[in-house]
View 1 (tube, rainbow, N blue to C red):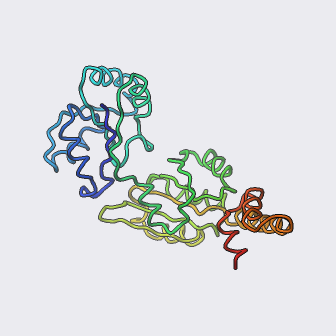
View 2 (tube, one colour):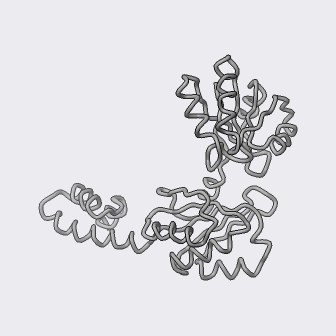
View 3 (tube, helix red, strand yellow):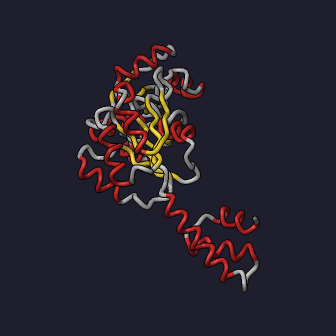
Length: 271
């Protein structure tokens, strides 16, 4: 079978006991960067053979790995850090392996954007992950423009070379009052999680070059104006429906019609 094994995103202790056991027991480990992964394996005394599997050889290497699986071997797929396939290669392999009738088992663990979301203090009941934005500002702003009215928390990955340009584009598209949380070097020695309006966040980051280094998760608060408009519209609809329907049913229908959150409307009506 093929195991999809999550590995630490920084601190080597952030690995599960099951992951260590699986990595020791499989016949082969397919790693994004064998030199990088060898450090983790040596740390835990794992001597399983390694083979490279990355975005440049994914199409050619997957046949070899599938042949090994069909021959009865077990393989663990790992990325450089975190959960494989989350902004990393592996989708085509998993699809091919499943189509061939081979079992695919996840071994869950660390994931950078989930870790950042849990500590960001932004709404986490609804969010969307968008990976890395375009390296070009025009394309980046065009993509962000499509998300202006998104109500959910927006999550992106960004590199140290583009973090300032990315935040500047966000300020231009979303407005300087939009709240953004930047999580840098999660679980590592210089971990930083900073949240503020873009008007305040950009000067702070520009004033300290150390805050421009490392790997970034950028979380953007959903458009509060859209949520407020939907809530106000739901109240108007509720005022009409309550004349003919029981309260709970009127609240449910009003929220659905206006695209508002039912629980928030229900609490407001009760109050």
